[in-house]
Image (cartoon, one colour):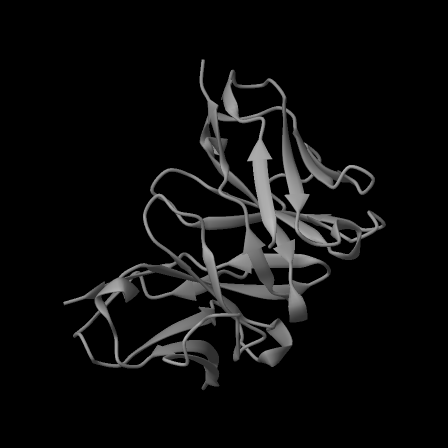
Length: 110
Length: 118
């Protein structure tokens, strides 16, 4: 069974740039998987950041961008801020009406 | 303003059933598909099920197929999740979410906690 992979954790300095990725244990992620990204802080519901690879959700600052890098989907945060410290999840549309989330990346800003 | 409010969570014994509800407002409910997503304590998000805007199609994750049923009542702007044969490991916060543009999820409820325990 194909699993969606994300880095378990990542750290970035304030003002720095970080790229989180979303891959597959078997195969490559392409735009055909309509990758989307969500941000979640402890105790809160997820917030939608990005859908269909690189379309920002309403109100999301342009510091957040999405792309395909190599064989993975990617979420890049430029000019990281303290309140970017969150868990980040990707989800892929696998076809046949099925979506699968990655395990999430815990981002630390320090 | 889109608003999704889940209810129906609580403590249930293993093997028993529970029905969750999600009240939708602020948009034309009958025009949108809807998802259920859950999150076990300290764990990641897990997609469970989706229903098409008109209820014509329903799809489930393998983990819940055959035990959970997603449904909707467009006349009441309500989404439901009937959960049967619950297991302890299904203790989680259950979120309803709107099927957004381009196969994304655009709005989320605040979630309802289901605890499966004897």
